[in-house]
Image (cartoon, rainbow, N blue to C red; front, side, top):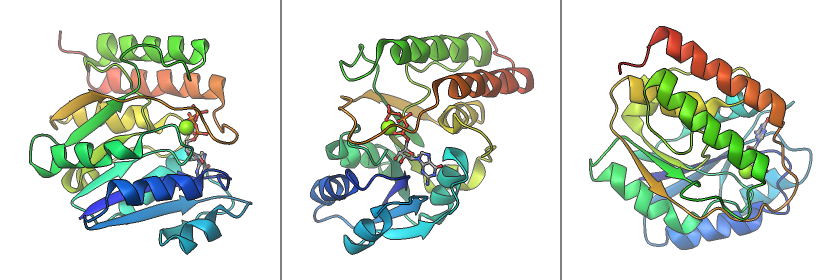
Length: 225
Ligand SMILES: Nc1nc2c(ncn2[C@@H]2O[C@H](COP(=O)(O)OP(=O)(O)OP(=O)(O)O)[C@@H](O)[C@H]2O)c(=O)[nH]1
Ligand SMILES: [Mg+2]
């Protein structure tokens, strides 16, 4: 079974079309859609009405706690994550899931950064590029996008990898830790769309936490080259 995991905070404008796109992509395949929701708007009702399993986490505890929870709740052999904002292509879910299900790898990172997406503000692009370079130099992990919200994780990987859910930038740990533990990781490029609704990204705290997570891992597992 394929699990699709999302976390949501006030995504009522996007949730309907995102779930519809997921259903279309996975038509004919056994799947579940699991959402940890911290919204004040009608996101959870819309999602439930469309057959998603919605777990409420309110008041909001931040991206990390929501993501850690939703990954634990998923029952599939593979779990594919994406933001609930229309930026990631749901049509790519089967391709990512199949790379894990076939035993090809344990994690697929869907990178947005083959080149600068027109939909990504230049400062964000620059920051993401810097994070990737830092991850390579300091931790020894080669990736073009440490912050992608679209990944496929095997069930075994989710069970084994323990991450720190406090603070922003959890995707950084969710990629670097499995790499350091020896899990097989592949990266594919995907297009990145225009966001529906308001961003929850706090640029400066996220940047600070990204470096905090990278340095923490660099000290416990220094780059081996
Ligand atoms: N449950 C829950 N979901 C959250 C929380 N913070 C963010 N989210 C959701 O996490 C996903 C990622 O957040 P975004 O606002 O898209 O952040 P981003 O992708 O870094 O920024 P954009 O490029 O503007 O999309 C979205 O689906 C949000 O609704 C939270 O505290 N709790
Ligand atoms: Mg987003």
